[in-house]
Image (cartoon, rainbow, N blue to C red; front, side, top):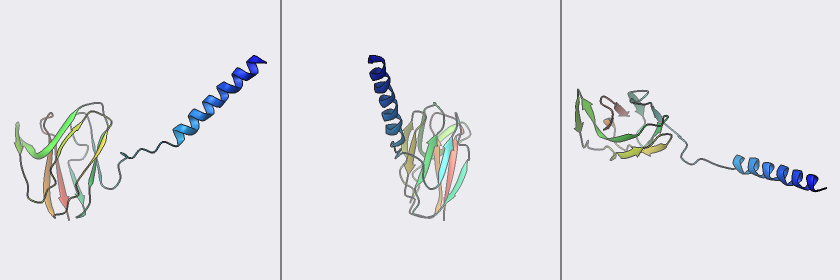
Length: 126
């Protein structure tokens, strides 16, 4: 009899866990225009978006990235404040997603990783 009660409680616990896991909604999931990062680069170095859009940036690996406005020029970091660009000062620790923007001004804007030389992203806004 006790075996049936223990088995029933175990089954109930497993079903409860499964149902609870199905109800989880990840609000940080990327939506809209998205750029992914690898270990030391943006998986695409340019993206074109529409004026008013925000850009989702996804860190697909367990590597830290610190993103700022500007770019790498050769081996030199060149921070920049570009008119109309949203301020970017983001730290990723791996497996996270963050939104930048909105980009409300048409033009070309630059984002770079301060940790990884040459890791540049150009955002073109139409």
